[in-house]
Length: 118
Image (cartoon, rainbow, N blue to C red; front, side):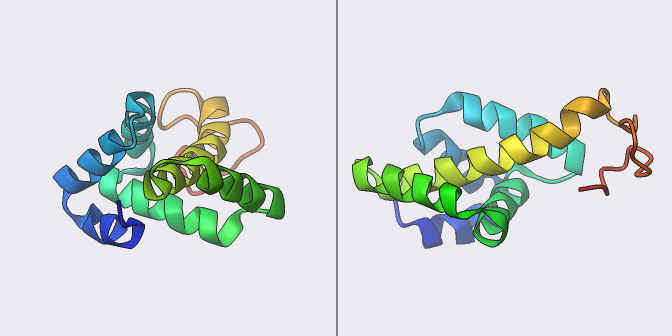
């Protein structure tokens, strides 16, 4: 799997789902699918955004974890994609979980439940 080609193919929803399935983690795809409803994105939009968020926001320990995965992975592209998407999901799930149902703001936030907070 060439990661750059896969990410470019995320514009096509079928390609995005296929790439996440190819990672061998169906639970990851289910988590992405659940998160798309929170942000009003397609699976491809969420996955490509997840990769960008990791690249821009991950700390040194996160990058070290990614390097460790890449050293041991049979398919480094799939390992990288899985790691980056999982990292973004954990960040987003931490924000979404306190909010409860979609549209309900969480304590101490003024987002009004629209997901605009960080």
